[in-house]
Image (cartoon, rainbow, N blue to C red; front, top):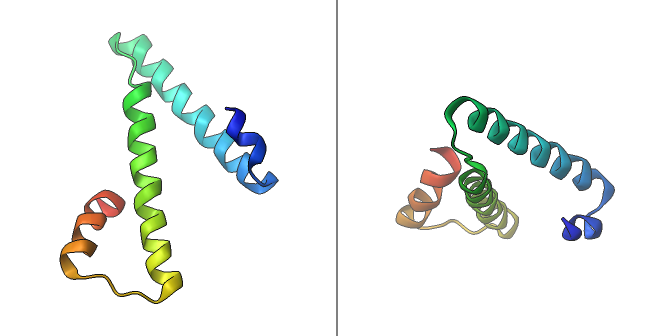
Length: 79
């Protein structure tokens, strides 16, 4: 969580909301099913954010990815 100190204030709010929601979901899942999915949820959020970042870089640079590259990233970003 120390890395949050380096984020702009507007991003701190978003990060904190996502962090709290993910922990709350994990807690509820653990209480109901006896399994804590926190690690899996964190990995999934990281993958999704990375896929969004790839798309943002394509857009910002005007790059048009090849179909295979686009679909590979789209599986993560769009499901």
